[in-house]
Amino acid sequence: MPGRPRDTLSVWQVVELARHPDRPYALDYIRRMAPDFVELHGDRVSHDDPALVAGLGTWRDMTVVFFGQQKGRNLAERVSRNWAMMHPEGYRKAMRLARQAAKFGFPIVSLVDTPGAFPGAGAEERGIALAIGQAIMGWFEIPVPVVAAVIGEGGSGGALGMAVADRVLMLENSIYSVASPEAAASIVWRDNARKVEAAAQLQITSRDLLAMGVVEEVVPEPEGGAHLDHEAAARALEAVLWRHLEQLLPIPTAELLQHRYERFRYIDSLLQAAPDFGPKVEPRGAAGNPAER
Amino acid sequence: MAASGGRLPPIALTTNCPSCGVGLVPETLRDQCYVCDCGHHFRMHGDAWIALLADAGSWHERWADIRPHDLLEWKVPKAYQETIDQARAEGLNEAVRVGTATLAGHPIWLAVFDFRFVGGSLSIVAGERLTRSLEQAAAARTPYVLLAASGGARMQEGILALMQMAKINAAVGRLHQAATPYFSILTDPTYGGVPASLALLADVNIAEPGAAIGFTGPRVIRQSTYADLPSGFQSAEFQLRCGQVDMVVARTELRARLAHLIELYLRPLRGRR
Image (cartoon, rainbow over all chains, first blue to last red; front, side, top):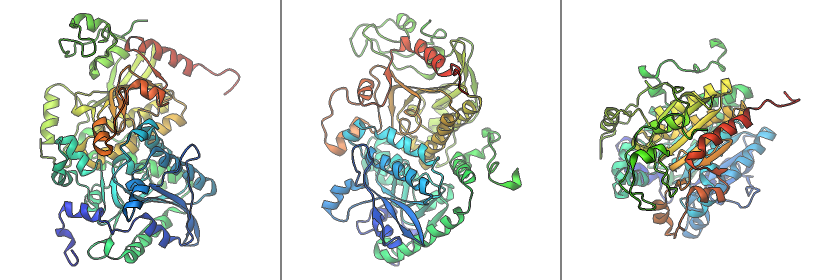
């Protein structure tokens, strides 16, 4: 739909763009940002999870640790990447390398693109719920700047496990949702064919999330969508990621972690403002902003 | 030690036990914490859990006045505002209630999911109550007891329901940093965003016999992978074998076990600190 005004896209058209088979995937961005990217593998317990790419490389003269939920371009690759649906080992690999980044002081970039964590028996047996819970909790203790971007699908807890960051960005035609439209329809209607209605109600577009204060910035895509020009999409994302990371680098660690805590503590600011919520238990910025102390 | 802190309120029951088929006598069952002679544990609502866990008269509820709001203006198949109003008319106050209490004389923070309120789903109000209580427990080093029963995050609150998982787990991290003992009781059913946030992150994870506990429900797993799931898949006993919970404890033994654990974890250290 080149040339089509962006604000006339229906929610479902955005979902289809977010899932477009030609859309740039995590490695398409990472390899452009850090051409010397070295992938590291394994959770050091039992497995490597190919649905999550992890490693380090040089970006703007810094060593940076990159994570990316990686989809496949063809059927064989999709199967081997498990459609970017992570198993517990993926979240454990992420936390191993996040702690390694912390040890060396490397900033972290995490690219989110998953329909959700893998809904399978093996994932359950090996503790997918706990792995996600530990990752979400663990990110709050990683004392280096973390910048995340939803580049396609931000599906449920499987996405959130890789999106606890100081700044969270979204590409214009990406989605981020409590559950995939299909899953939400299945829960609310017991019929996943109602996915289009579910998607409209869930408010999952970048514009919705920006308005709710859940993400800091929306990165505009090339006209017609990122799939039409990978190079331009990567340039746009790189520039915005850098602008945010640059602001985070000078912040002292204690302050960085306190801000990260408060970012999520008051992320529902829409409701925090409701009269029945009462005064905040910990006023925002109490530890971070010298002017308020 | 008494199996419950006070007399349990009545709960709605089927006429026969779904496990052994015996005809049920509500008053008898009430006196045995709604556990059938065959061992079947009936689901209990939030009021019954508070009566079971808290010493009689010790429950002091907090932040009961914060209310859900229909931020997404959710309309179909049922308006969210209608769901909220209906639940309130039935006397239910959200899917999670929190407060202070004593358990066998020990001060605790107690958080109780109520499956009757939109399937015990994790919402903004639930997340706010959990987070405030976790923060207070950490500040005072008061043991935290969670009673989980949930179908997952609340769809009608969209992305902000998902964000509660991060908000809550940040506070769980601070509870751990403050070395505050945390006990989680997982009951039937506990799924989705609740075990993937705070419910499995306790110092001691306790499951009720036969409780179904997991991330993705069996229906969705079968749909998406065509897998044959073994009987007992995602049961409390399965989660014990898989290393996700520390113990499976019968409801009638639960209070005594919690009291013992609180004593063990709160005992002053000799020659250190």
